[in-house]
Image: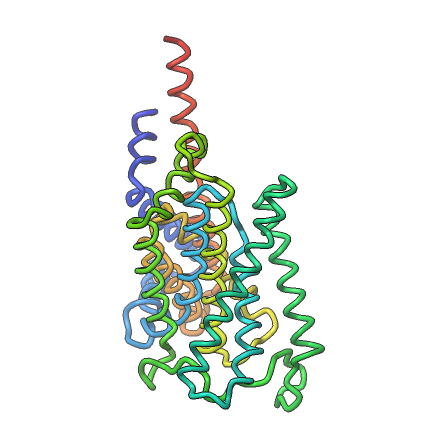
Length: 357
């Protein structure tokens, strides 16, 4: 039994595939229990998320913020820093973009977009740095601090949207949103589909992050800190400085993701636009599925996005509740998290065997 667990725990791809299959199986079982045809339901789910040009475009559009959230989580967790702050940093980046972009209308659109994206990255990075500083100075759990900062960012953005930057001429008087951004936006790659240039920016972010992690001295220090913090300290790596740098970059990626969602999809900040779709939690799941592998985050994010898009499709065409996709993702999250338990089990067995000798 231990040998089987060790083999599974060592094969990240195998484990993730098993988790995906298990999630789809549970989804199929629930469909059957509720009187739906599970085979048709699962096939409809996959077709609606991946097998038509419209489905692919919709999937890539939704995947864009998930990729940024996944990169943010993979960078932090893969370096040994348990930050859950991607959601708050995405919100800060999004509200920054919604405030800045409309006020740069006097600039050429391309330049205005670049400036907006940079300022959103800086805002996300600084917001992440605050939580990192609090954690380091007061010896507080980073996970708890960043979780609390998510709520703070959400409430702050809601206040700014409601009372400071609310669109006074919105057609929907009940909508809580900022004024619409005109001109300074990320255009669609094809006018027929919703996929915008934010997806290409996400691909660039994947490539740059992978290069930093795998080909630079900073990336080496970050990876060593994640593998063995004690060894890294013994080897002369300043763990606090490394933590600040990792979380700065993590926050910048999340802030950029929030800005791309504003400039490419909503063209304004809409209250709860980051929290309601669950982008950050999907990103965390994607990073877990890939075992914090940067390239793996890209494919995991696209897969999770396709499941969500397919869920909306089967709800309309087959009257199957789209919540089934949340169940599938929940099962996947639970199972990919279990591999860390398997690793702990393996380490404990090794320690006990060493003690017996």
